[in-house]
Image 1 (cartoon, one colour):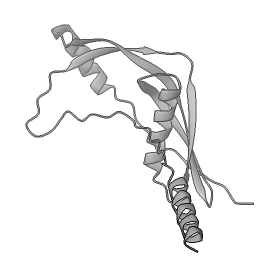
Image 2 (cartoon, rainbow, N blue to C red):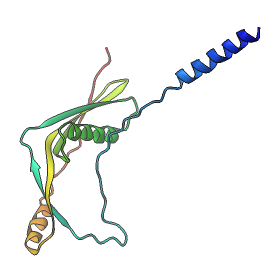
Image 3 (cartoon, helix red, strand yellow):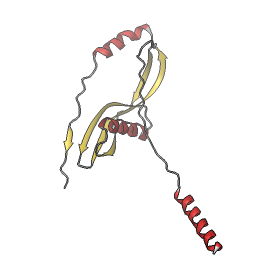
Image 4 (cartoon, one colour):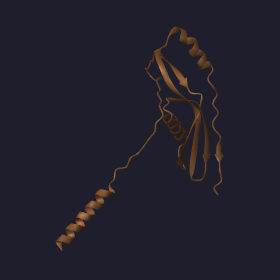
Length: 148
């Protein structure tokens, strides 16, 4: 009798150990940095971008109720990671929502940073022109599809 109980106990322990496999969670992130805040004075740094002329595309899908902004950030992260880029220039988004999920596709030009340096006096007019010429951003149109 006790031998059967020991075997059952060992079997129970073995099943418990095997069923406790570790789970791996993968998360992609998009880089952001807010340098303007209370008491923060940051000396500007100039960097050149090496922008590729071939666009990249990435698509992510989230469950119903997923935050669209989070899905957009995830799509950008996947796109730059796939081509080993630092940023995505001029990203455009296509958002398709069905009854059970939302799919976000991003397309843009991948770019990498090069030649970081401190700002110089001759850079100031260029920065002012860039601030004045900020592009207008239109929010993407949602495409609603009927579930068949």
